[in-house]
Image (cartoon, rainbow, N blue to C red; front, side, top):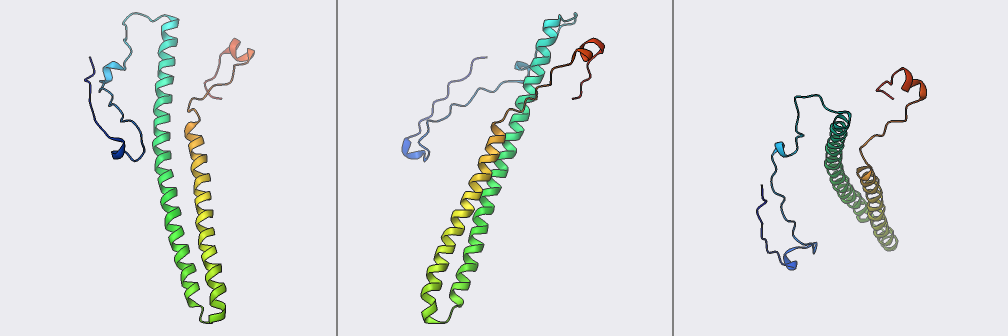
Length: 162
């Protein structure tokens, strides 16, 4: 199966990220991913290859699921930070407007303006910290390496759980 060549023309002005367009991948059927099965007995190397392929595809699927979930949670964090900032800023503004003493109003205005700026900065830092931690978890491999078996386990059989 030969992939079709897709031509797209996107000007840099049309792309706010300044990135080159992504060429779509050809669609592949599930048969392209299957390993050929033989009716005869597989060799030890073939079984090991099939086992490794199964581990790799499971790891890829786990990484995909983890990435999609992480992206969803990252969106939630940014949305919640924005909503919380608007709520806090509105409450601070209401307190600022409640001051009726003219001499105190100058100090209250200055203080409340600074509190709104600080609240925004702190919420942005908290969101950034949370997102970076999630990105670190997404980046971490989903493949679990089993501990090496002991001599006793190699002699008398190895259990699958660890």
